[in-house]
Length: 284
Image (tube, rainbow, N blue to C red; front, top):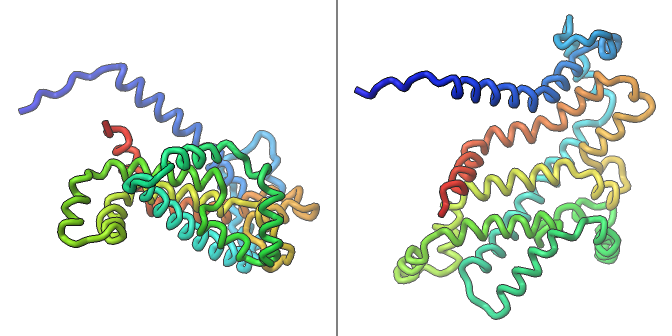
C-alpha cells in the first residue's frame, strides 16, 4: 500500500492562492451576469449588491426586441464560420508545405511570412480597402469571408501557419515514408494522418480565429454600409447609443448574448485545447 503523503502547509497555501487568482479573473464576468439581471434603479445602487433581488430576466427579452438581433446574429455566424473554415484551410496547406516539403527559398519566404506579424492592420487598411473596392466586394459579405481563404489578416494568418508548422514537424518522417511506400501521396498523407494527429493544434487555432472574427468591429464598419448586413459587434456598439447609454443592465445583457457563442465553442473544444497545451509542455 502506498503511504499517505504528509500534509504540507505549502500545498494548502498554493491552492488558496490559485483559488483567489481564479476568483479574481472570473469576477468581471460574474459581475456582468449580475448586472444584466438588475433593474435600472439597482445598477448604480450604493453600496452595490451582487445578487439582484429580484432578478430581471426580462432584460434579455427587452434587448432582443429592441433591435434586429436575429439578423445581426445570423450575419455573424455566417461570416465567422465560413471565415474560420477558410483561414484554417489556408493555414493548414501553407504550414504543411513549410513543414514537410522542400523547395527553393523556403526559409526566406517563411521568415518574411513571420515578419508580417509585426504589421498592424491599420497599416494595410487603405491598400486592402482599395483591393476590396476594385474587386467590387464593397457592402458585401464577400469582403469579410473570401480574404480568409487566402490567409486572412497578416498577423493571424502568419501565427496560424507558425503554430501548425510546429505540430506538423513533430510527426515522425518515418511515418510519411511508410505511407508513401504503400502508395499514398502527400495530399492523402495530410488528410489521413497529419490532420487527425493535429486536432489539438487545429482546435486552438480555430478558437483564436473564431474569437477574432466574431469580435471584429472595424472590418464590418469599413466594408459594409447596409444596416441589415452588419454583425453583432456593430449591434452591441449601437446598443450604447444615446437612448441606451444609461441602461447598463441592457448593455450587460447584450454583451452576454454576444460572448455566449465564444464560451460555448470553448467548452466544446476544451479537451483539445488542454491536450495542445500539454503536448507543447512535454515536447522536447
